[in-house]
Image 1 (cartoon, helix red, strand yellow):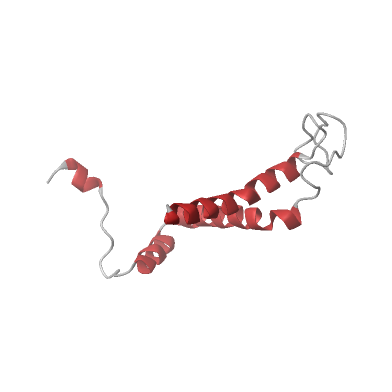
Image 2 (image 1 turned 90 degrees about the horizontal axis):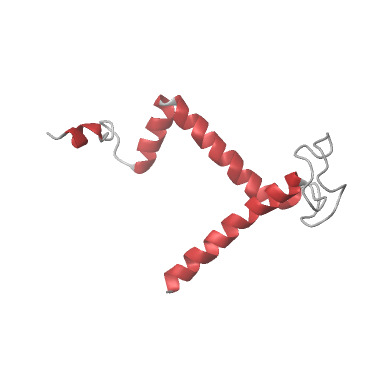
Length: 108
């Protein structure tokens, strides 16, 4: 048996489906639960960004390069635009763009 084949983990005995394998992994590996939680939170943030972003994407809300404060936790950029709004809005476009690329690739 080669060394590479010893490193590959086989699914546990009694697990016959992909769902069973995922549930088994989540039950027995705390790091998998933490990773799945982070992925779900990032996904929810991206989907809900238009409703949770405090300002419009290009709305100047303060001075240029404003320091972080309670109203602007990440501060302001070179246009006086809130960085939280920019981060939230930039992540919300990613799922839509990727779905467009997938649908375009299907027809190509």
